[in-house]
Image (cartoon, rainbow, N blue to C red):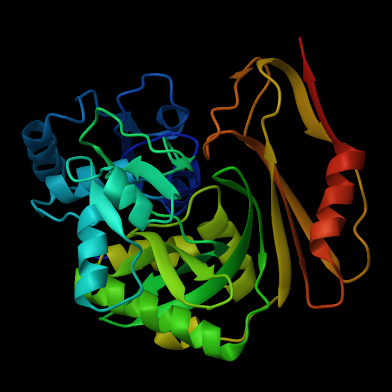
Length: 377
């Protein structure tokens, strides 16, 4: 991996643990940077960097002195810190700027308003249905739906017309100004949090339109080589494609490294690192046949507030032709609360098959009801 033998991973929570372990397994030295003293990544690092993430100049000097390559995964915050360390003034996370790019490219764009110009007249233009959300943010944090006029005293919030339709995650990588798509995942949601992501059943015309729309936005925005995670809506009745938001990073909760890895057969840790190091990539790997045509990831939400006594799955055997993987995010003695955002998930069940007649959404639900156990004190 080029001349770099040491990496600075930021942040270093459980969501970066896979990256840290991968680097360690491949004999690289790992330094971790996180403002939280208790994050699990520090336990696996060769060295912990005791510098506040706001002190970019000091972090830069450390990277130069110790020849550390700064890297992040599955984190907008980490991506911003890495860009600052590298001296890149890139703003791919501002949703107002993203909407303006969409308008410039003449993509389908909902009406949107800053806090300053949002008023009752503009609310009526949106047919009395709007979404309020942070201009910069992810993970469904502070996203709200309104059918009554409400304006926050907060210029970090913006408002946009509600688009009724089905949502999808679009996952892939950018390489030399071309997009390679790994998956388009249909989402089922509770409020604003998706708990089921599964194989789509769209016709080719809509798939082509999704790929065209996502490609136009990402290439115009100047995404660097590496993974992208884009959320879109296919509008009900019209089938128009709207972008919800897009990020130059991997999807969280193992949906990129694990799920897309299983679908494609690619080592996506190696792929992601190689892309970020600007190594030459064999693009033939990106166009291989999918290993599975049918899949479903069921996220298990936190439904009860309290201290977790135990959490596990009872042993079970898959049906023939189906392969299931489980992942537990929460742990014993953890205090759980449902914040109605992406952090409010305690485990996942992922099933894969090449039998398209099998309803994996129902299959994972049966596993959840019969074999998943979460006990509280």
